[in-house]
Image (tube, rainbow, N blue to C red; front, side, top):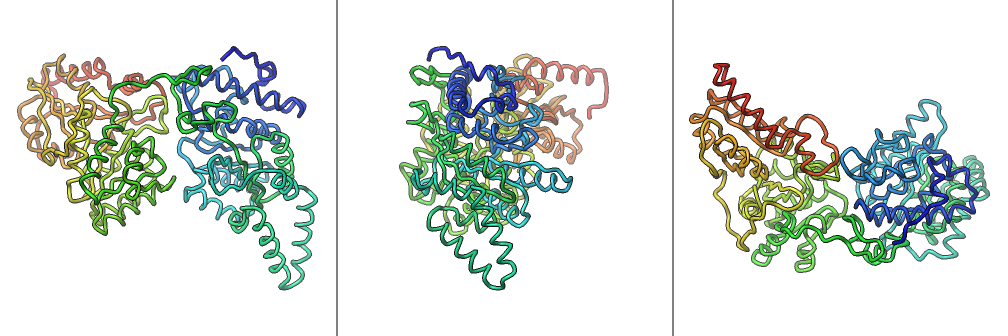
Length: 626
């Protein structure tokens, strides 16, 4: 791709500058913005296809509305890169998703134009509604615009927010960025005409005037309202949103900039809950992304001229280990069902979906439903496996407790992206699952140290008659390729990996590599614990009575995690041994490489070795052992 000199874009340091342009200049600006986005993300990696699809919509929103005074709330953040570029962060895009650089998502601390932080989907309407209610309470007149994708709109939270908004009658505009809905009708001249008509001042003046007049005529108002909804429902797919109390406009072509400007300007003049349905194409304007929007949803650095993506690591990922295991299992056990909340590719279920479509269920962005749906399957003798990211399971916590664990149902949770996740940062880090799950009765917790153990512990959890959670990280492991068997490991038993003296390191999960490196410096004993619940208390007792210091090591927050479980047991037994806990601190670890994040958390080998050496020195000096 040749170097682009964005003559207009270079003038835009804020949306105020954008609003100084003539409308006739905006199509050229949109093209420059798309070119810049493509050139930038091809160098840094990040989310691409969704952003390419909303270039015109982003330009139109910032041109029509007085941001940041008018609150613009983007859902998730995948589609918000053009927004970042237009709001004073163009030059910072070179550091996107890097340590101390721009976040790949929305952050209030990053810019006043990021009205609400977002990493998880389907929160925008709720946040915008809260802001609208606050503005009304303060006597402030401003607009509140929530931009949400069709996938995010599938979540129950979005409909809960719209149901609430319809009765509050606040000034709220929901913009549906529809880039994949098969129910959308073709967008053409008639749809454009209807959008202009339904959003126009004359129509809405007549609509409001008629309502006021019909309020005085008993019985007629209800009939007229039904007639209006019937006629609109025949022509456009907005009846549901109208029934929720929104004035629905659309669908319109999200790449037709003049149409977007006209429609948004008309809707700006309207009051109350409004819903604009915009149809866009993921990857619009870049042929490789148009042809493969899933592939170009999130990318590593690539050649923009050829569209050729850099090859990812040739190593076996934990996600691939899970994929192979569940397919092998399903070929032998017809009770296996795979359930995922809109994470087919990310969770490694593409092969399963193709080979066992009747037992594959992608429930959309509906984590709560996914867990309770799996509980229902388990009630009837099936063996569901819920494939879910650690941070997304947080959204189904009540269902995990009440619908699965309380009833002791046989559901296996394959929890991906546990621990630190690198460039996705704090919003997607699986920092809390050991803590929030360990306190739940009946729920077993397993953490493999490598790829081979991941497969074995998945099978062990599946064979367990009750709820069990296996957590594993993003990316590749140390290279322990698993055999394609369905063998299990002894339940609740750890593995002694190295014999040493004075110090015994209890390693939980994939921190084993660091544990062994530490042990080499300290001549320490290393136990690969495998299980957080149940703990191998026999081994802990033996090590606690033969070593001066017990060290626990985990990639989970210290509060309530695996180390806390060891502390609780050691204290209950009255054992006199010094315990040192290593884990994630009581803070959010922002984006960077995974190694940079481990260093920031104090989990690199030199820092941990220094802390352990200090404890040994204190022990030798005769200080209290606890």
